[in-house]
Length: 125
Image (cartoon, rainbow, N blue to C red):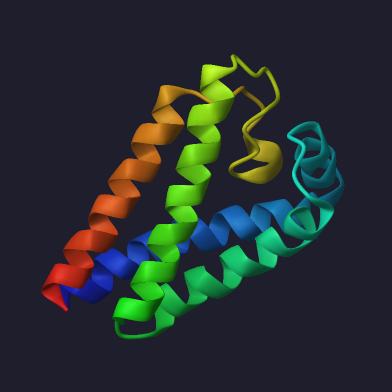
């Protein structure tokens, strides 16, 4: 039960991030271009976030889904660390148009916390 609650909590956050990107798709596309994301990644990411978030919310935690979600967050975190290291002023856009500030350590810590919840969910499953 706790494993599913933890996975679902992370799933809601990931799904909300994808939904916000879709709601203001024009701003997301501008931010993605400014971050030099490949167009295919920029177009597909909100849908991938909705799918992964939905799987975490709706399914009993499985190693595969937890692993994919962790990998997604790990990639996001590595990207954020690179942006912070280069002192990028491009908005994080982690939550679409709601994230208008540059990436910060706070974003990295949030992602590490979410990954920790996924690891705990996996250990309890």
